[in-house]
View 1 (cartoon, one colour):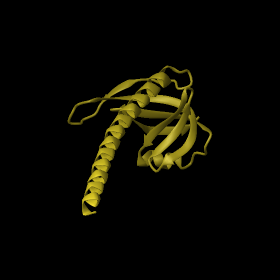
View 2 (cartoon, rainbow, N blue to C red; view 1 turned 90 degrees about the vertical axis):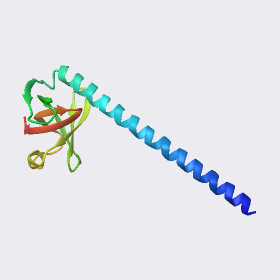
View 3 (cartoon, one colour; view 1 turned 90 degrees about the horizontal axis):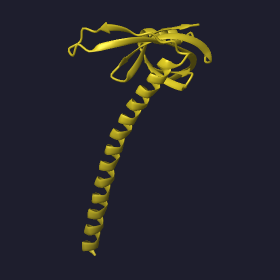
View 4 (spheres, one colour; view 1 turned 60 degrees about the vertical axis):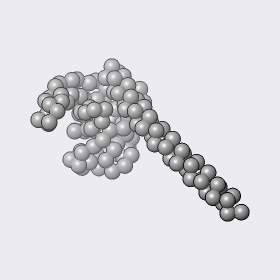
Length: 135
């Protein structure tokens, strides 16, 4: 009888380990898909007539000397997704943007369904709004 409990416990342990490993792999793949989706959405929103975007290069003084591109866009503010993310409806669908503490103060005054004009940067796939104003 003790032998059966040992085998059962070992089987449960192995299944638990395999399930945990599979979840981590899927989470990593989902993260890659999300970055790809954001890049694709940004690319199409750049071409849309509603989000008239302009690109200017600004060099950040960071360690990697990466070039950060500042862009502008227009859309409909849908509201806060969480404390540091807002959703803006663009011509090609909703897009989430990170916001800074300074922009959070600007967003608190906006009502959902407000037409907005905003400036954002795309740094390694993370879209961060640096300024937002009601149209």
